Image 1 (cartoon, rainbow, N blue to C red):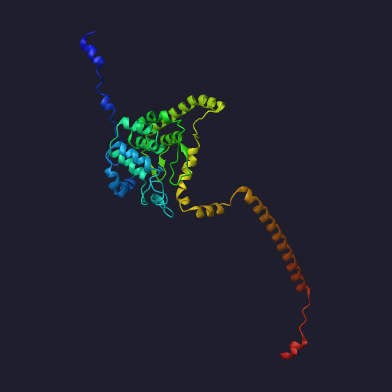
Image 2 (image 1 turned 60 degrees about the vertical axis):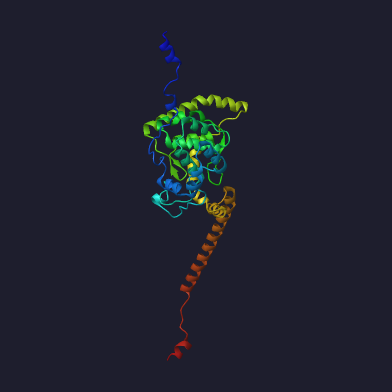
Length: 319
């Protein structure tokens, strides 16, 4: 082997630095965010004043650790969609803005830093806060090519770290379930992720099915031994979407929620005694109605059979 060939084998590859540079897929100006959300981010004092002072990746990560408590685009109760229809009342977030969340402000701040591949992996594997990891997964979902999404997420499909993405709490899920939802769902609370082309979506679903088949024996063994497994439930994503669609109804307070539950009739065991009592009252009322009808009919018949004699005193009075 010549000295030139040996040198070429020992020297580092020229593409190593380029491999660390992440491509940006889609609209590089908007990060593929909803225009209304982006306008609220850019117009918020939190983003323009406070986040403007943060210049490094580590400063932004520290801000995420202290400030992010949920992953919705709007702060709880700030966006009212009651009575709105069409594009204004749907999940697209058009025409009904609110107070944009710190999570989305910091997500866009990360985008302005143009993170490297190493930095994004640092977010996904961060151990201080699940919200740092979750924003890393959201950064990947908004900025990376759809064909690369499964490769980014495959190592985290069964991650059992818990996170609560809902504003106000009450929607705890696992990181694995969150990642799976990003792969198979477009809607994210009151906004949308970038659309995945249909052929790539089918490939992702097939890879997910293959992964589930491979992990099934492992999960069964862990359950038999009493070990911990992922809490992901494939049917839970649909339930989460139904709960997300009703989010604005619950945002008006516990009193309205109690009234809404009361209107629905309460629990089944509470309804059954009331139903039996209502049926009994209805039967008694029907019996009373039949007796009243019979007595009225008898009275009419007697009045018809009674002879009608004109009083003589009355006739003399009018002569």
